Amino acid sequence: THLIHLQFFISKNKNQNYKKKNKIIIRRVIKKCLKDNLFLIFFSTSSADRNINDYTNSKKICEKEINKFSRNKKLKYLILRIYNVYSTDLDSRGVIPDFVNKIKSKKRLSISFSENVRDFIYMDDLLELIRKSTNLKKSMKIQVGTGKGTKISLLAKKIQNKFNPHCEIAF
Image 1: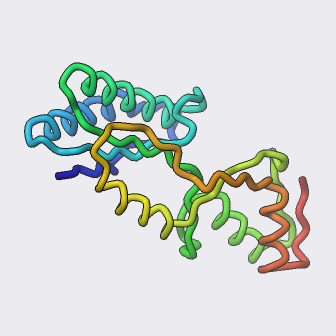
Image 2: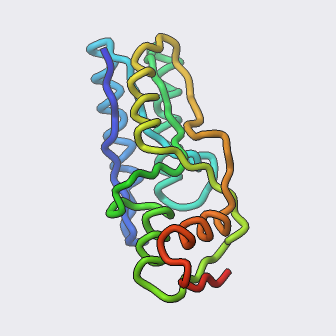
């Protein structure tokens, strides 16, 4: 009934661009959904409308492909524009595990853009949303977060207080 698309190629190498490869793959996924009458759930990023890097641009290209096939071929879909996901797994990527690991191991943490505000969603909450989303019948795009912004400087101070109050933070 549903196809959850998680595969996505990214690269930290600025000379390697995966936009074309991701577009080819999303077209294959779309064709599979149309052929087998599957509801597509696509994991995107909250930054898909911002021209930040190849990752965000590639997600936007895939969203456009999904929208195009939705209009032309009646593809049913759900695009989840996910904000910053965190969990207790400190080996995962993201600002929270990065801050925790650095604060635990260093005497000083330097933070750029400390006044930026981000929305964080806990992994278990995201999984519950995915489970519930399989009941949807209508195509849509959803911003996935808590709706509560957290200033990066405040986040760093909370992590500092919990894991290493003696760690110096430079903003």
